[in-house]
Image (cartoon, rainbow, N blue to C red; front, top):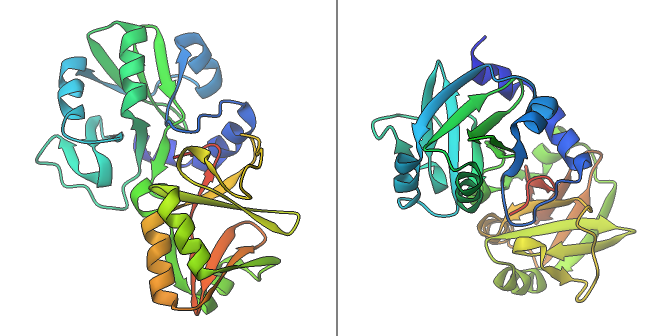
Amino acid sequence: MSTGKIYRSGLFVVSLLLMLSGYLHAQTFGTIFTSDEAYVKFGPVLDSVVISTDVVNALMKQTTGVMMFNIENGKLTILGANRVVLYPKEAVVPDSVVFHSYSISQIVELEKKGEAKNLQVEARKSVLSISNGTFVMEIGAPCPPYCYETLGTLFTAEKANELYGKVLTSVSMKTDELTALLDKAGSVIMFNIEKGKVQVLGSNRVVLVPAGADIPASTVFTVYSSGQVKLLLTQGGAAETFIEQRQNVLTITNGATTMEIGAPCPPYCY
């Protein structure tokens, strides 16, 4: 089995562990550990590729926000925001290939702590990590499914019922109200239903609804790209939008269109 398949197979388990771990970061992908801590949490390195920090720093200037990494058959590929290929330039990357996203700010912090001239991109059993010196970074977001520019997939309401089951709890919101919230939210908007009432956060978990509420960082919200929510509202065309809790997911429905495949925050916060 390739190292890519090995670490992809453990994404669900790792996501569950991370939500319980207490390493909660509202704006960043990537938590920095010592090498010993990383070994205990994520196991031994199965494959690694070395790349100069100078090369990585040059690639940073060609993108914004995040960089994404993948090792397949011993070769390293790096993407920028919107999955734009950065390294090697000639690489052709199908949208279905899973990369791990790290915030550029966290990569810079890792380099400062490690003080080494090279980064090691490492495939472990269930994760992809990045090392510099005696420090290791993990807890990146897998893309897909959690590609922050396009969080949220549209289905017919009928197809959503087939895929995700019936709606258990539903809270309605005027579409005009949601549109106004999108203008305040930033690049993403997050939803949760608590005791029959909807809670809405913007980028960096800024509280939008209810205004002024104190919402613990440990409360899990479902994150959608603001652009995808706007697309839902345009396609649905209804005056009311419904935030829906199903057995395992939170969906949003407008008219005959339903959106799902959002990211849980934590651990994948934007």
